[in-house]
Image (tube, rainbow, N blue to C red):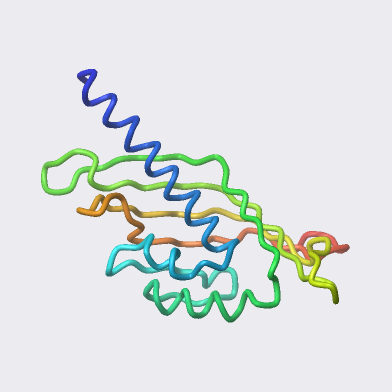
Length: 158
């Protein structure tokens, strides 16, 4: 690999990592417009393993906005990111796959609007499929594979 290709790969990896962080922040902040902008026009998300839906980014954003109202405090921790780049139409690095583990504490608010301790914690693994577009890297696919969940004060369940 030439030094130029190595530098481009490092830059792509940093950009992809930033996109995954932007995804977590959009969900945690309830910024559904930002969430939709992270996806390609045909981008899809699958939250079925966590009791959710599968569909296009617009439909899933609507569902997330409604279903997460009960947990206004959210904080995704996305770790152990493994990034692989692939080829599309002979250009290296136009596709990326990211597998990453997550822990997601979620909580409600008290009568004064202050966050309370997490009511619910879940964890699992994300599978992200990304595509380099004219606007930069975008999510083409997000698949959530929830492995466990625990209501506050109880033992973990599968």
